[in-house]
Amino acid sequence: MQQPKQFGVGDRVRTVRKTDGLPKGSYGTVVRVLVAPDCSDVDFDSYPWHRLVYNRDLELVERENAVGQS
Image (tube, rainbow, N blue to C red):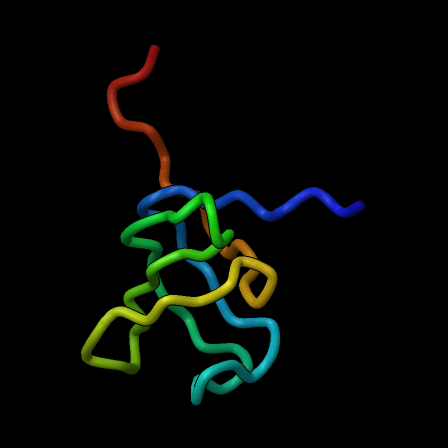
């Protein structure tokens, strides 16, 4: 069984396939992660509201850097 993709708040992601009216390659920022349904709430650059997307339909573009860690 494949391990589910894990994203964190602030991660930049993009869609890997067309999903729920979003074209493949849509970029956005994760604003909330839901563990039970393996979904993330994503604020897409080209849409005015957040969209709930299955993590399997997303890929990581850039992870948020932790500030102030030593």
